[in-house]
Image (tube, rainbow, N blue to C red; front, side):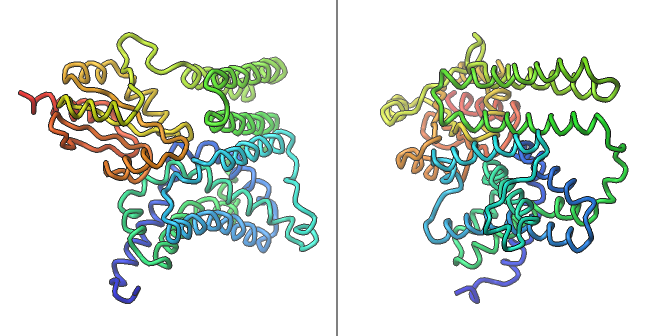
Length: 397
């Protein structure tokens, strides 16, 4: 069956998947993974070349293990990209791993390895493998829309081709970090280790804790979630005060910068959406609401979101909060409908597919006739959204 698919087409898609995986390192999802990757690179920097080679291979193997597993599930079970994150058990394990990595990073401890792995002389490289695996997991929520046509091609192909494309994504994602493990001299321009490196390590641990708080949104009550951010900020402030008093020079700069960013992040994620008078107020999706909107020949905006989708939250706290968006929606008489797919829901998942969405974030604008005016995947800007909304207003004249 594979022979009937042009080999040049397969090769081009594999190359595109590798490049897309490489560029995936530029998405917001990678931020929580940076401390894990940096830790692995620095721990291997002084090793023998043969050890660094094996560590780089182990890191890459961890990344490939996740994406090949996801590719297999996609090929054989027709899973969608976000299926894993719709599982409370999976998200709970991820949060626990992030907290665990935060602790070992803060204390600079080796990651505990099961006795069978240590006895098999795998202890040294198990941490690199686990780092690659967890880094791939953290990058996954941003990968779906970012890869676009590559995934659309992958799900229509035989299982070996699908897995090859997913494996290429993982390979591209891991390449920069495997290269740094192999060539630690590229890091030689960094200043020599000192008090500043301890402060950086503690900042990385705090970033991991912030990631754990973010992903816990689907596990805790809505009323509790903002308080987790305020508790995290309190921890950062206590740490920052201590470091600022005890440190000097670079340490104080790092501390002040980290504390300021932590305050900004907490205010953004802990504040309720639609709290301002000039902000867009979403209506929660229901089949009845959508049917009524269509029956009244009213234009509408569908936004698909989830608590575990970092890019969704970025859009909701930037683009969708702009007064210009709320004004455009009001002028067009449009109904803004938010479809929450944090947990698996066959009806909502089917709506996402029927609307033309492959993964999150995804939004679609419909005119009064129910025709799709525009679709948005991944990150986009306010002007593009307002321009698409204005088109529905003009079509009604």
